[in-house]
Length: 78
Image (cartoon, rainbow, N blue to C red; front, side, top):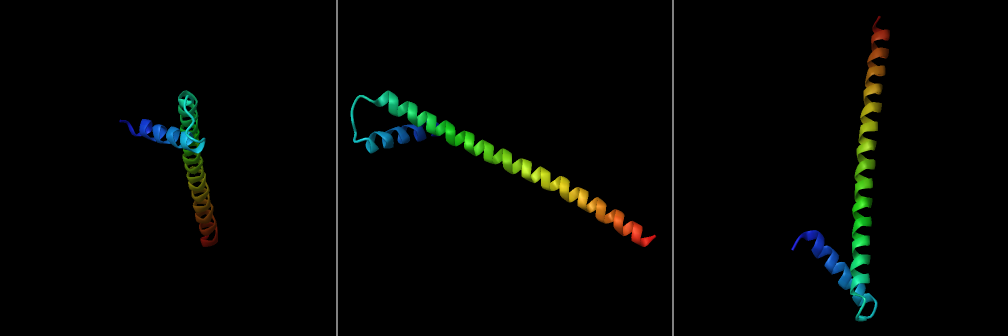
């Protein structure tokens, strides 16, 4: 069984248990488990994207700072 399906199955089972093990709501539990899984994946992707943007931004700032520092040092040396 694929890891994603296993996680959704476990989540659907947890929802079923939390709701008192009421029979007949399998489709609803499964859909909610899928929705929750997708939301978790989207959140993780957004976090990764945010981290990548932060790192790229920091690299640009560091590069500009290094260039400016080198320029100041060059001016002082003259």
